[in-house]
Each structure stands twice: as structure tokens, then as C-alpha cells.
Length: 134
Image 1 (cartoon, rainbow, N blue to C red):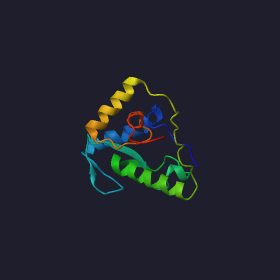
Image 2: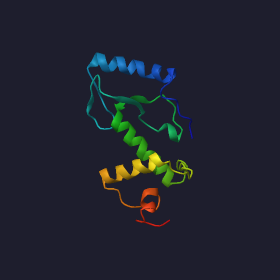
Image 3: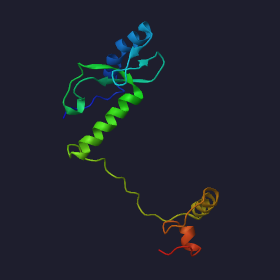
Image 4: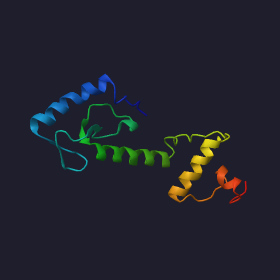
């Protein structure tokens, strides 16, 4: 699998610059994904038009795509690769157990009243009021 460029670095900015200038000069360019015009000032990404970089392509086939089109395609590809077991799923972040402060407990109670809190065993206020047991 090819390594991904950091899309915020100078190298990526150099790859985008000619396309940005062309987009302005021509008053817009067609998005290869949806066929609609990308207008100057609209958010856009530089996307691969043939084989995706995740499958080994280089950067020779880049062109502007609507940001939403590009990211939707990338998300679908990532989902497909994970489903096929070719890319591991992102790790889940574990939140360590901790004791809530009195202020946090009060805040949770108030937020629950405001937003229709459902009693849970994770809520110290619900446990303290006997709404649920741990």
C-alpha cells in the first residue's frame, strides 16, 4: 500500500497551485466524480483519477474534485478496504474510569434535566438518587 502524503505540507501545496490557478483562469473546472463545475472559491480537494493512492498509485493522475465528492469516495474506499480486511479499523479510544467531582455531578444533573437525560448506571447522579444501580 502506498504511503499517503500529508495534504497540508508544502509538497501538496505545490501540487495544488497549478490547479488553483487554472480553476481561477478558466472560471471553473468539471469535477471528475460528479461532472458538475467546481467554481472558484468553492472548497475542493486534489484527488486521484485512476487507481487510488491507498492501492499503490503515484501522484501523476491528480485533478480537482469537489471536497464532498473526494471525501465521500475516500470514505467508501476506506470502508471497502476495512471490510475486506486489507486495512485495520481505527483503534477505539478507551476512556479511563475516574471519580466525578461534585461540580461535574451537578452539571450532569442539570444537563440531564435540560436535554431529557435517560438514567444510566454511568451517571453518578442517577445512582445517588437510586434511579439505577451499579
